[in-house]
Length: 286
Image (cartoon, rainbow, N blue to C red):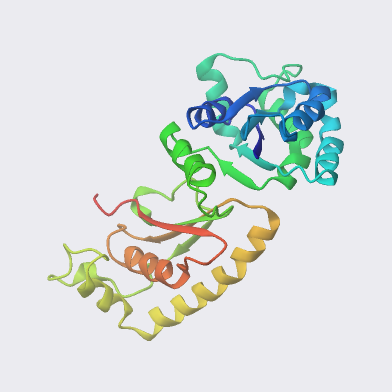
């Protein structure tokens, strides 16, 4: 039996997630009254149930009864009824935009501010977030991206990393990426732009990489950067952070930032690590 509790912040994609589960053979139930969940689970785990893949939606619409969920989870553990909790999250700015675009009111619509309602919802759902096996931030996900992540976890049984690190090179002349958590300015490093044969190349090419890294200060900076980020990652994981965007910036985003971002990525990449990692070059084609 695979039993998944799908929960999260309103507007983060819970209904979409349940449809994806249903498309993949799960029996799905949304917004079942909390008082009925334990009986429903007992039936599922009995030998008479034919359902072996089930997903149920639990959210703020349960109102005051939501507090009962903690006891239900404790009872399930005591009965050896295994469950997984999927928590869908999203930043406030994106949630407010989604509510405006769909012209839907927030389920807790008793405040004069949608943001206040979202913050109160976060507070009430925090106990489920703390117990979640999987936390997916849908702020920047398209439906196809969410489908891919859910299918990799629940259909293909691939390991899921709660923290995903993005290393992003960029050019300061085009502005600092809005979603960066950490920003590092590498404009003090040797600049290939002033070398005629390197000017039109990028940090993806070995000649540029060799030029940038052929300096003691470049190696020292990279060593210190790797050391600091390696220290931060496990602490961010312990704190419950699920997205970390590290911005590496130079003037145009073609040479130095691309080189250092690539070096940092290769230093941190480890298939066995308890975090995922990817690299992006925002301005390399500008």
